[in-house]
Amino acid sequence: METGRVVVVMGVSGTGKTTVGELLAAELGVPYAEADAFHSPANVAKMASGTPLVDEDRWPWLDAIGAWAAGRAGQGGVVSCSALKRVYRDRLRAAAPGIVFVHLHGSRELISARQSARTDHFMPSSLIDSQFATLEPLEADEAGVRVDVASGPETVAREAAAALRHR
Image (cartoon, rainbow, N blue to C red; front, side, top):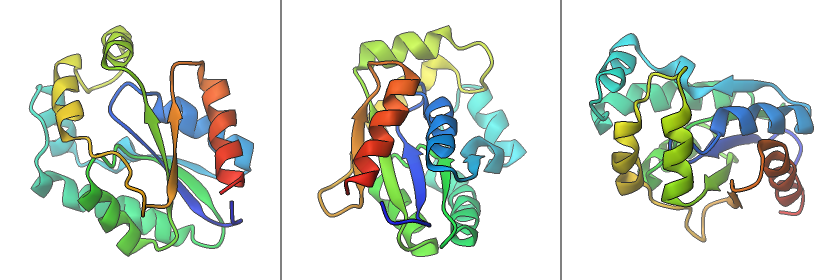
C-alpha cells in the first residue's frame, strides 16, 4: 500500500469495523478515527430508536468523515465507516481522492449473532436486515480489498494489512 493513504474499514454493523480498524491502524502505524463519532446527536437518536438513517441523514456525516480523511492525505489514517452504498464511497473519494477501502464481510448468521451479543452500542440488532439490504459490495473499479471476518479480529487486521500492502 502506498504510504500516506487513508483506509476506510467498511461493512455492515457487527462486522467488527471498530475493533479491526483500531488494530489495522496500529499495524500500519497511523491514527484511527471512529465514524460513529462523526454522527450528529439526531442521527444517533434515530438509530437508537430503531429507525434506519436515510441518505439525507448521511450526507453531513459522510462529509465530516471525508474532511477528516482529506486532512490525513499524505500522512495516512484509518477510519471505520459502514460506506454501504457505492454513492457513499464515491462521496468519500470525492472529498479524499486516493482513499482505499477494506470491506469486512461475513455470513448473515455470524454478523447477526455478533450484533445481538453487543450491549454497548446504539445500533440495535433490529437494523441488521436494513444494513444487508443496503449493502453494495465493492466493485472491481474501486480501490480496496475484501476480508472475511470469520476469524478473530487480530487475524482479520493482519490479513487486511497484508492485502493492502500487496495492492
